[in-house]
Length: 179
Image 1 (cartoon, helix red, strand yellow):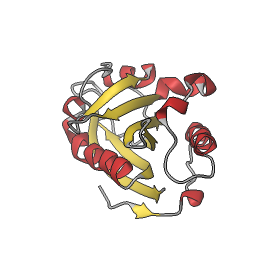
Image 2 (cartoon, rainbow, N blue to C red):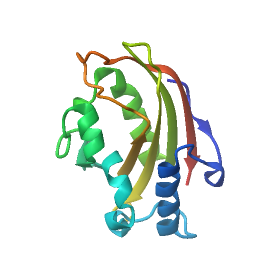
Image 3 (cartoon, helix red, strand yellow):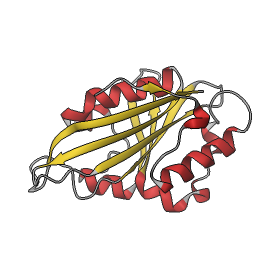
Image 4 (cartoon, rainbow, N blue to C red):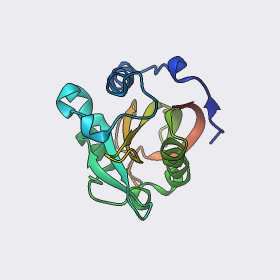
């Protein structure tokens, strides 16, 4: 996975309209202040059509990334709902290292992270997935939550499938926008 290119937050523009909608909502809740919006301000009913493709991840006091909510489309692609489970331990092995790095960047810098990844399937198809990671703080201001939206991955990604993913990292673009 290539290193992230750092850009200004105002220059971050997702290709996928749904990711732009979620980013606009995040900016709206953030207002003009520094930092990330509080997780308590997130209203799922403000973005109902996006919910099937998003996942809410919480970094616990033990630094374990826990999936608090997984959209139905993502659960279907994984063939498993990860709600309530440790994220990294339940991802395909080929994704763990890049996912761990992404969540560390988003929560520790903090930043918004946009990843465009080409995924090679056994059939030879190479769809492009666009993943948007948005940081959210808890009531004390600690960066604790990430809402991740995934678009462009069609079909199931679980190993052993007829058209399973052969290579997660054909090419990727990582754009990091510090807050």
